[in-house]
Structure formats: structure tokens, C-alpha cells
Length: 360
Image (tube, rainbow, N blue to C red; front, side, top):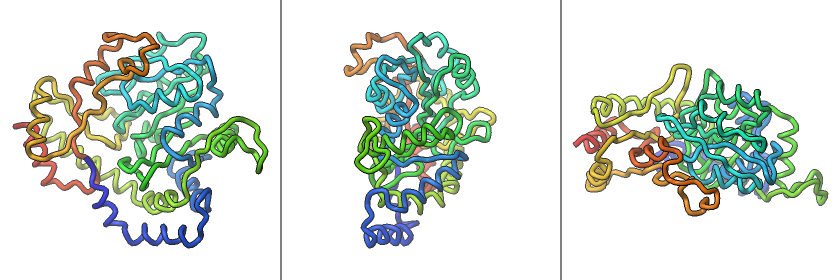
């Protein structure tokens, strides 16, 4: 689905030099490269603060805790996402309340208000595949009901909503640097971005066992710090991110032109005022998905289904008492979506080969 070796070859010299600097310095935990990267991300995102943590999942969990989400609270989110979204809500002690999605795969902002109860304390929108959610409506609801908004930006680094980066709109945003992401490291890594000083100060303590000074603890926290080595690699990569996102957008445009004429295929639409960063390129097949999957398999072309079973139907969430039919759009999407290879180094001839296999 992505060619990490091709990307590494293009920046190999700089990455190796950055890694050697960390190895020679031996400051492997919260070394200076972490602070440098935090500053680079805060500038790129257009926010005041950025706090590096150990993974995208931890970024969500720490963001929720820093926003004051606790036992007994409810957080509204989408059932059509990776399990880390709901998992982080549970780790904060709260309960995920699912809301159906639109056919663009993101949470349906028009349906959120009906899910709000006196226990609701936050909304957690997921900018799935790199497409920003309808943040104007979400932020209006948050203001009306005095709710926090924690943006899940695991798949949307480089995306924009009305000229603002995703993650810079709500109370805070959670980023993932998993290797396959738009900006990926060579292991696990994550970050929380925010304009709120109090949230930033809580995050700094939470990532380091709740410590506000050495061997002094103000709260229960986590062991969740971005490795210096990963930060050093990301410092190299972030210099290329706009070029890489541009190439993803170009590749998606070619896919759309090749596949968009089929009446059976729904290609991604990009609303006005939105920048889609295409962490994944995902189509919908109204019928015959299995046949397309088989054709791709025979031609040794990778594909993936993100996601084959909505969270409200997962065994782990059985106690939430949801049932099939509760979120019909999300359930329809799980039967129709298909993601195709997408990365900056993907060549036009490869896209044409993939599209031909999808079509016939």
C-alpha cells in the first residue's frame, strides 16, 4: 500500500546523518531533537504548542485526559474508524457514544446534537483518510453545549479546513507518526497540538508519569515520550511534507480521472475550501467488491479495507448495547470501501495499471 523504501532512498543521506547525531549524543529520551521537532510542528500547524508522545493512540488518550475527560463522561465519535479512537476514550475512563457518518466517511455533523446528553463532555471527530470533517458545525455545537473538541488527525497531517490545518481548530489535535502516515517515523510516535497553555502544561506532565518536577508527581500519568531518534528522523522528513502531500493530491487526481467514469465506482469528492491530504485513496464499489479484490490479488496489486467492521459491532464493545442497523451509513460503507496504493513516489504508469485492474 506504500513504498517506504522508495521514500527512504530519497532522503537516506540526511536521515542517516540525523540518526548518527542521536547515537553519538546518547540522549535517547527527550533529547534536544524532540524540542526542535515540537517547534517545527507547532509552526507548521499554526498553533502555539506541540507535545511529542509515544504514539498516535497515546496522543488521543493524553489529549482527552488533558482536556479533563474522566470517569463517567461521554465522548461522541464515529464508529467508522480505527479502534484507537474509541480505545483512547476508554483509557481516559469515559464512554464512547457513536454517531453515524456521511457518505464522505466522516462523522455526520448534523446528527451529533441528537447524541448529546448531560454526560457529554467532548466531541472527537476523525478526519478519515485525510479529508477534514465539517468543523464549522462541530465547533458551533461545541460552543453551544460547552464541549471540548479533540481532533483525531492520525490520517490528516497536511490537510486543511478553510485554510487552517486539521488539529489547529478544536481544543487540541492528536497526530500519529506511524510509518505509513503522511509524515511517518521509523517506529511509533505521536504528538498533541493545541493553543491552550493549560492543556499544554498538563500534557507535559501526563507524558512523564504526571511529574511537574523530578520525583514530584501532581497527577497519575503515562510513560509516553516521543523517542529522540524518531524526532530526529521526523525533523528531516517534515521539510519534505508539503511536496509529498502535493504528490498524493496529484496521484489522487489521476485515480479519479481513470476511475470516475465507472457508474459502479464512487471516487473521493473534495468539498470547496478543503485540502484533502490523501493518507489513503479510498473508493466505493456499489457492487462487486469481492471480484475487484480478486482481480487485484491475481495481479499482485495490494489493497485494503479501512474498515471491514464498524466499532459498534466489534465484540469488545458489546456491552455498549449497539446492534446492527444502528448506524446504517457506516455499515453500508464497511461493505463498499476499498483503498488502493497511495504514496508520493507512486508513478502514473503504476496508477494506470492499478486502475485498469479495478475496472476490468
